Amino acid sequence: MTRKDERGHRWTDLGVERAVIRIVRRLSPGFGRRPITRKTRLHTDLGWDDWYVLRVVKPIRRTLHETLEDRVVLALRTVGDLVAYVWNRMEDA
Amino acid sequence: MSACRLALAGLLAARAAVAQAPATTTAPATTAPATTAPAAGDEPAWTILVGHSYSSARALTQPATFTLEQERGQPLYTVMDASALLRGSLAPSAWLELGVRARGGSARPPGERAYGAMARMYGDLDPILLAAGYEYLADGHFEVTQPAAMLELTPLGGAPGLGTWVSPALHLRWRPWLGVSWGKGVRPYARLSGECVSGRVEAGIETTSWLVRGSALGFVAGDLSLRLVGGLYATASGEAGRAPPTFEPSGRFGVGLGFRLGPS
Figure 1 (cartoon, rainbow over the protein chains, first blue to last red):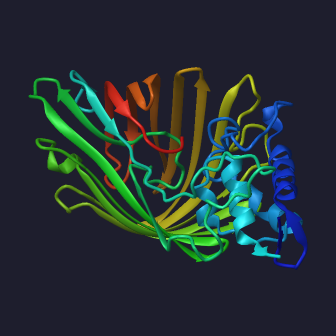
Figure 2 (tube, chains in turn orange, green):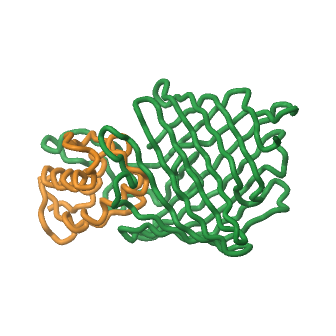
Figure 3 (cartoon, rainbow over the protein chains, first blue to last red):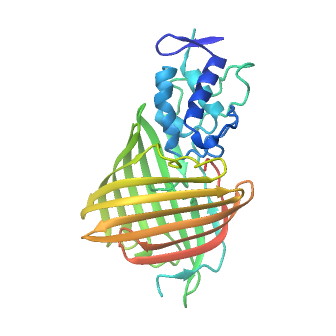
């Protein structure tokens, strides 16, 4: 299954997940080499506070070409939530 | 010392972060696409948050609290400190919060009660978060009021421990805020918050310094919690210093049980 981002690029669900996890890992230098999965919790596991979460918005816009709503991003709890949010903002290809 | 109180009875804390967040999706992407998060345009227009810190820097995971306290020589009295926020989007990178707060109690001296309401807009200008708002604070008599506009900012991240754990072994994070308020005079302020988590133990501290008529006035609050089970904690919290609207010296210490629900 594929979907299109705001620029019309096609993405698979796995591709979205991998791209999001890469972004999350870059923003988590304090997480070490531990694996980041969909179940990884942004606040509890990664230690992101309310505002640090917003740092994902810019790289996701740059990489996945999706503009996320800050207010929704603030309410996300896991990496899986973030993947799902990005995926669901994309259009069916 | 009138500013110091000994908490004799328990503290019951409740927190409800009723953020209508997207549902958690744990299914591997290779087996099923994520479809439970909101699609574009499906997000609820407003989110209600109860028990979240009323201040812009949610340093302390301090919930709405109901406390029994005693001042020396005085009977027990209750203190309720609660706040609620209504959060809605203005644009993808901006949102609005409307909030109310009340700190009072059954027999709490009116002059030591505090009420407030505020409207605040946030702009995500990565790497800076900018907030501008208007806040109204009053004591219990509504004799000391402090309507004020404010502007404050914080870096989203960029330094070790700023907004995220320092390391996997050291769960310590901190966040600075710089701001200025315009009300009865211009009051620049700086706020520094820190949180540390080690196993079941969580500690937080938040210190704020205001520049009022050429003098620096400070206020510090902290808490130490031990997670018992689920969202149930044994908690000790305290605060001391001079806080708006009165900037009178004050202090409090309490111990008891707390309950948290939502991200922390």
